[in-house]
Length: 444
Image 1 (cartoon, rainbow, N blue to C red):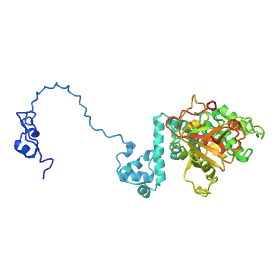
Image 2: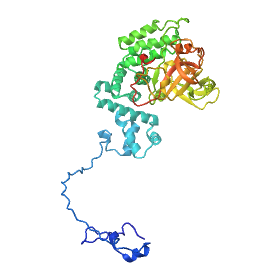
Image 3: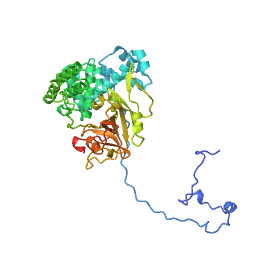
Image 4: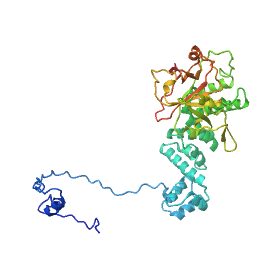
């Protein structure tokens, strides 16, 4: 049996181009060829050896191996596994000093349950310590004030863990606000969520009055937005607005909350006969991971625009959730669903909501000189409002045998008095480049 080591090359020092495949063996060839061997097959091959130009001497690229710097503090680097476990068991040192010991034990084969059994640190707490220490290190690297950082030396893991989703600049501002206002873990969590969510709320009322770079304004806007989810007037709405006013930092934010609290322009009840107002339909670009970070969501049945319009009417009307786990219940089965964050236009969508999927965004009457886009969209429609009432509102209707979104004035000209529902929101699919939000001027 032959192996790669038993096969040795045949060399011929007299011929530098010698190869075993060029050996002329006529007796073997003649027994296998279907035709008599000819002289052309046996013609010797010749070549001229061209001397190669001398190559410049290459620079020495070898570098001696240097191990990566250890993430452990210097006083713990010489400890073995037993010593590191002893440090964790007795909490020797500050929390951000012994926190890096946990991932080093993971690398040696320990698991969160085994570490918990030995040290008493639960798996959830292990993760919190690791993440919080990484957040703290990023703040140190960004030259955050040492006086602010010292605030987190004792019991700061819970606070720093909550701001893990913020950028480096946002973390620095959040730390300042946490220290100045002595926030607890729940307050830090609310602050981080408010700062993370603020840029995505450009279509919400009053957004322009709050400053993005000011943590207090972001938190104030969150309470301000939550107040609009309650009936006006109500104790819950007033309490949320007072909380928003208390944490607001900029004067513009305070004025906006005061106007709402004192019953400003939007606090007045609308007259039933006043149908001349302009109706805004927000167009929202979803963000990757936005549903996972949302504090509340809406579940809607989905219909395709190219299907029979009867399916839109047959889609489930009631989608409820309840119990300790928020189990979703529907009146009947449906094969397509979508989960959306509970944006402000969807808060009043109690029953009859449906999302209609269009493969081409040109069904929307926006100006073609800027938004003539061929992309998938979802049109969220309220089926409980089928009457074509307002001229400036947008409705989903069957026009010329197909589904179309159009203004009430255009439908009235065509003699359409009842439609499939009133459009409350248009959702665009998520993508990396999100700097393309629509303004009011983009609608026809």
